Amino acid sequence: MSKERLYLFDTTLRDGAQTNGVDFTLEDKVVVAEMLDKLGIDYVEGGYPGANPTDDAFFDTKRTNRAVFTAFGMTKRAGVSLSNDPGLRALIDARSDAICFVAKTWDYHVRVALGISEEENLRSISESVAAACAAGKEVLLDCEHFFDGYKANPDYALACAKAAYDAGARWVVLCDTNGGTLPEEVETIVSEVGKVIPGDHIGIHAHNDTEQAVANSLAAVRAGARQVQGTLNGIGERCGNANLTSLIPTLLLKPAYADRFEIGVDEDRLAGLSNLSHRFDELVNRASNRQAPYVGASAFTTKAGIHASAILKDPRTYEHVPPEKVGNRRHVLVSDQAGKANLLAELGRLGIAVARDDHRLDSLLREVKQREGRGYSYEGAAASFELLARRTLGEVPAYFDVRQFDVNVEHRINALKERVTVSLAVVKVRVGDEELISAAEGNGPVNALDQALRKDLGVYRDAIADLELVDYKVRILNGGTGAVTRVLIESTDASGDSWFTVGVSENIVDASFEALTDAIVYKLVRDGVPATTM
Ligand SMILES: [Zn+2]
Image (cartoon, rainbow, N blue to C red; front, side, top):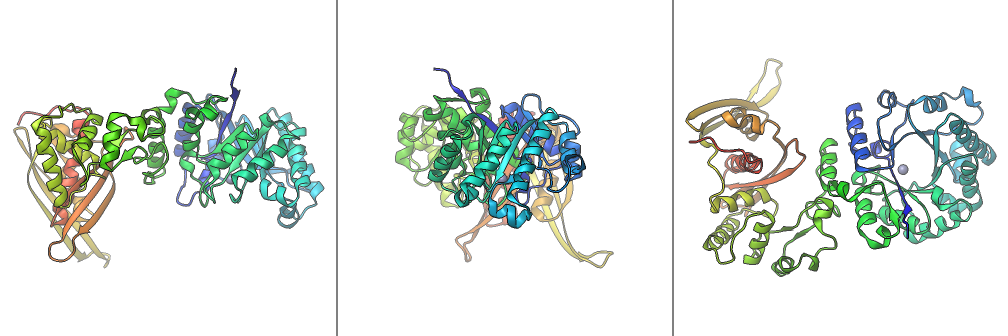
């Protein structure tokens, strides 16, 4: 039985750009379009030509190879002729393959927000779609507020969709603009629309305001829709859009969909999905959601000892899909509850072979428990755990030795009569036969220390050039006089990977320093950098 084709439409660069705190530059847009194109997305919606200089420049050139490059904009304004509408002109002139028009399909919005008659709105839809088709574009119509409009006046909402389809639109996209529709309603309404417009011309555009955007998209597919719109990592206004990063693996790995449908993403590309999701977060400068389905750092993480030992025997006992299918990995937390089973499972995942009766396993377990008693937490700091394990097994080269450091915090009034605080750090490191001294300023003691330490690590300087500290968290444990500080640092580099390291001390600078050096050593070990002889 041949499979039906399901099309994926990405609106990260258009609807996703409405996300609070996200602001794409032209360069960002070029990178994201390329990521989506390579992933196998069928349509990449790039923005709104005619609306701002960034989008104008973005639509100067076609930005995709494989995907249909799509421009977004309004249908023709009522009361002006086609040739006198500059918005429509900009859309037609853009170097896109397709135009996605947005039009109101809720009679109440047509009357109140647009202040035009229902007939005028229908005419504007037909004329705009026909004009874009005549200009050689593939045309889509986003039916804004379709589900709410359908509930208020089904005949009018359907008439709008039908007007676009009859005028030559390839796709009529049903939008749950307010995101309040539930899956059962979506399924019923899409089935009704399917009686008037063939399903392979119907798309779904769901927002996530009741956390149903993915479920609503799947409901629409079950009801016959054959185009799914969404964004990377589900970004978007308010609670976001349907999350393509969750939808893609579901469509490819769950038999209910995988057996029936074919999408543009293949298994090879799917295996790069976790990395793509994290690279995208990096690009928009957001911390990755650890609990994101399929791609989150915790998506295949197990804590309790009993689960861990079962996972070790057969991963299928606690996993709904194999993590490597989406480029993620199994992770068994090393915690107070850890037994030997946890530890073995975790070492296995790290590719460290140790026999169950190896005595070093007992000393590592003792060491982990002892450190956890002192405030270390390896649950959130897998890189530090890996270093500890490899050190116990004698697998970590002695890269460098920090002999001394000095941090100075100065609060003063500068020449502009402003109060400023400046930190200066000096680090003395031994690398091989060399003794290196570097100094650096920073906006705080830890920042200055980080800068100074990385400034000159001699032969390793190039190897850590792309290392970047992305997050720094401090926790004070136990309160009172016995207080200790735990510092957790997230680092990343050009590979897009990120890793977490931990440091614990009564002194915040010491704790930070420990986590910083772990971050550097972890990168050197992971990249297989050889140590210079000391
Ligand atoms: Zn939307």
